[in-house]
Every structure is written in C-alpha cells, then in structure tokens.
Image 1 (cartoon, rainbow, N blue to C red):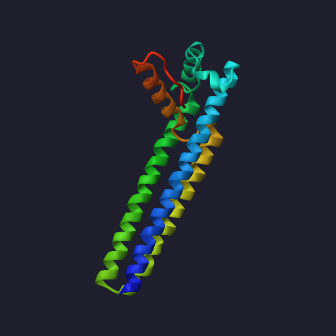
Image 2: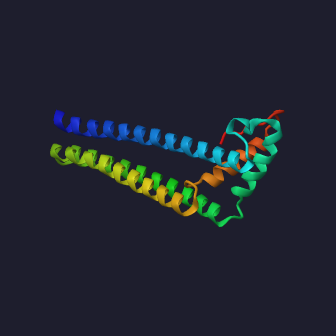
Image 3: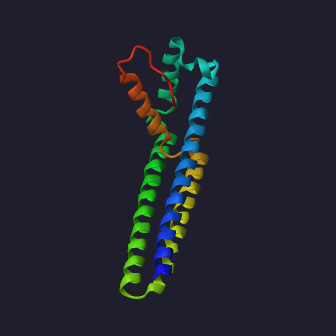
Length: 173
C-alpha cells in the first residue's frame, strides 16, 4: 500500500515540478521576446532602448507598434490563432493529465494496488504536451516572426497604455 501511495504522490510531485519548470521557461522566453520587441522598436526609431520611455519618443513607438502588430497583417492574425491553439492545447493536456490521474487512482483503489505505477504516465503525458506545445510555438515563431499570441498581447498592452490616465506612459513590452 505504501508503494502505491509513493507512486501516486511521486507522480503528482514530479508533474508539479515539471509544471513549475515549464512556467519558468515560459516566463524567460516571454522576457526574451519582450526585450527583442523593444530592441526592434528602438532600432526602427534609431534610438537607444533606454530612451524609448522619453516623452518625445513614446508617440513614435506607439505608432510603430500599432502598425507592426496591427490586426490587418496576416502574420499577426496567424500569431493570434496560434496563441489560442497553444492555450487550448495546454488546457487539453491538463484535463487529460487530471483524467489519467483520477483514473489511475480509481483503478488502484478498486482493482489492485499494482496499478499505481501507471500514475507515472501523467508525467509522460505532461512532457508530451509541453514538448509539442514548445515545438508548435517554435513553428509559429518561424512562420510569423512572433511567438503565439504575441501580436494580441502587444495590442492589449497598447490599449492599456493609451487608456492609462497617467501623465507619462511607460513602454514595457
């Protein structure tokens, strides 16, 4: 019985650890793309990145980002679609992992304690969904020049920036 509990708890802990690692990698990737976007804006405007928040450059930066990440561009629409597909893939993976875990626990309790070893399938399933999601994100970046959903996120950030009642907007993409 202790072995069965160890398998199930171990698989849950390993899945949580992998999820945290995937989250940290995702945050690092988004930070990298944010810096890349800021560098692209600064290069296009011919100014250093540190000067982007200077009041005389903010309007030019907003204009550039509005045009670059416009809904009218096919690559941006494709990036938005990829973002929705990648989010759906992530939710599907999480639901299937939960379903597999509940199924293994159920079969372990009702049938045999030896079935608990199949809880490690949750970890394998998580790795599969994370790997395919990362590959999909790479392909989206390759095809569109943006990571999945980046164009939508920039447009959302621009809307927040322009609707902020502060005196001096700050560009942080």
